[in-house]
Length: 482
View 1 (tube, rainbow, N blue to C red):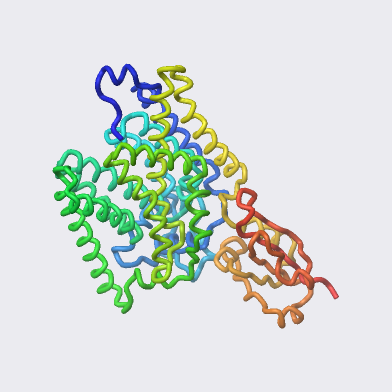
View 2: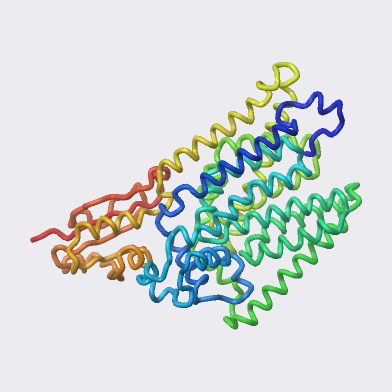
């Protein structure tokens, strides 16, 4: 996937492979990525997992091997003046008075997401050439999926960056045989693993592909060295896992506990994750880029293709013994972006000589415009594609009597943070008849489902996510007067 380097090839290259275009697109991608990620950072309601991040960034630290993903939020909360020593899950209602805000908690992961765009663009240039690197960086900058996780107080943006550093440095190592690149790849993989164990999916796919190539006698002089570095990386991760267990003393491996969570990695969910989250335009262009890499037998293209395809497929294949939510194959997105950018460069090379450089770059332009339109809908939505708990509780505060009981379903932490008091346990059907008049209920359901007890209660408000009509909807209900 390396771009042309000879003067003759450069003369025939399209617009995307010109040096000034690379730097222009990278600058545009970096600026757009920064504006999109900083804009409205405090608008989305806190997602339930963000409460765990804030608590672990505060006074509930975990074993050292599980803290890396929470350090960005801890740093920006500290810089914002939050009283970290007194922040824990037992006093969520007091967090606002302790200096906790959505922006302060999310700013660390946000800056990592911003920095990811130029870092990956610069590193990818030496592997795939300037045209593909610039387009891939632009796709990362404007894709809603990366924007979503960059605006989340979680570890996903940090893990994403570290996993891609592993892939690019490992590819440079395989190509050059330099120990420095292999060492950087190993360190990146280890740090990504410290963010979350699911980073091992990409490392495992890379190891399986390199191992198969080595056994098949593929004529690449540095395959064996790369495989040894991958084995050493896996051993380092296993050592951390053992130390974590010894330190925690829980009697259960973290990955085993992780696999017991009730997630549905069905085929429908997998398709939704790989197509809608990656973006249909990027997915289609990525498939075309994968076909190009297969026809060329491009080593790095095959590695990227394996990551793009096998990581989400592996999630489905492991469902019977290790169910994993599709958000954990977010790390394969850059592989799809690279494959899509390969297709853009190929179109540019083929079309430019006959129709001109502007026509040659049309493929990349159409792809980026299609993705940018999805981002426009995402930003216009304003909810960050998250449940609108803050809006629901703001409605309750504005309309409910100060002493009116509020019953909450699936939003206990949000009730404490936004309502400043603990919500009462949500009633079952038999208890509804005994609720006092004027009581309020805040209920979460899927967008296609009617609110619970709608036949016996007043439906006062409905808060949906416009950009995700299939997602969760928050209903505010009230017990009518007799």
